Image 1: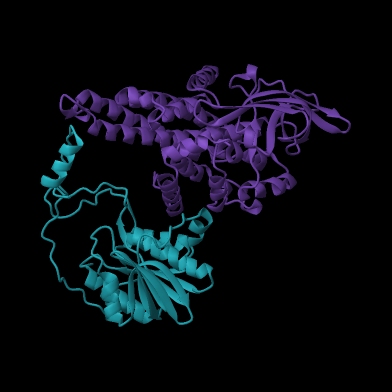
Image 2: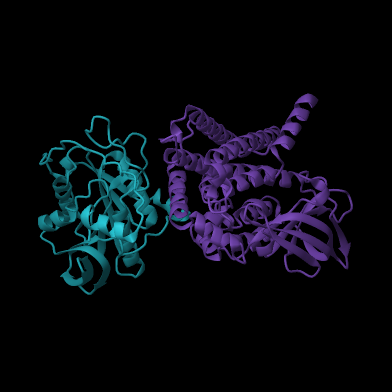
Length: 249
Length: 378
């Protein structure tokens, strides 16, 4: 069974994000970049399927500039077999990425597509669902447990107030939640092997996709600075403030 | 000259950095440090799985053929976590001595065990009277009943408590005054050990050898060149570790001064403190540059000229790192105030580790003195 995993290059989750002085976007100058944590969980899940003998090949795909090769190499070091970079820096909004991925899915014909539920840079949580619609495949989002048997995949989803279990016919699309697994560290031997694994680069033109802008970024603002706390003299005063000022109880 | 890390080194840095960030915070480190073993055996096995124990060893013995620069990358990241696992003693010192000086059979028998995480080693070099001079030792090997036995005392043997085997420097059993290296089972009859925690939260032991059965490491009983090469590698490794510690101290200090307020403003607004932190930054960068220089120089070759340059580079490095560590450590503690020396905050522990690194393999004063003497003699 072939598994296709998507990987996005984002700002490392440990980095404190800065906004450009003119508020036009996030400042990426000299910022450490990494694999989106949810995508890392997706890669880990695919590698575990391969270790169980269920998956036979893992293909990782990224859409982005040539520097996204770094993140694809990391995915290869974690256990993926080969990588595809769709080289495109313009208009990489969710719908365009989903269209590009749909073409890759058409070419690769995977039995299972595993994606992060969202990327931590724009937090859209859209691409997986859009890809499912474009490919006309069943989807299970926010997966916290995945098991593949015969020609179907059973996915436990984290939903408000509990868990929901779905069974999907393959081929299907699964997006990962935080608790699905704990990604491994790339071992040094695998890092060395990753250098020799194939990484193909294609362009949107090669895939026959024309990217058009559907949304326009108007501005980016940092979150308001947290104001200093106050000390209360009694529990009664605390309850009063929680009720009447914070209005949380 | 391009000092950028290659892809493999960058991924190694990321992987090690992620491990320290996710699984080796200060509280975890303290828990391991205070445990009976003094480190985490689970972490040791993880190091083996991740290939870190194989890094500097030759591929033919199960290693990954890494060089001093690769080791530098790993040690810098491990320094940020103040790791207490016996990496320095097993891999950088004793394992390296076996790789550099051992026979093919000894390498075959031992390196696989190190790489797999089953075998831990310690390097017993210094004695009470030798200070930091490895040539000033009196532990004596002699021939007895057809075998070799050791008699003598060794001090501050790092991680001997957890070691399965010891690599011991001693006067040759051929009674020619040479310093040779011998392999000894850590639990062999005649080995008496006094184990204790060191100031920086690691473990060390004072060892006494009384007619302990030993095996010569390698074919030659003159291991002076091997020991010097091992010490050069170790100096680069602990200096890289020191750079990691200093990076962490600098960022902790900058963050703290942005939060700590005096006169209703963060103390980071005070220009004099900004100057102090700029000085810390410059010392970190100069120490890093010296680590790069030494890591490249010690890996250049084995000709007489190259070995002399390697020795000089490691001496310069140890001097520079000692100087930088003192300034960065003292300033970090100063800017943190009393908190900087409490047991609960990592800053004081980082300063202790830097102080310990300054005493390992010769202090900055010793190396500066040696450099001056060499210059005067030239």
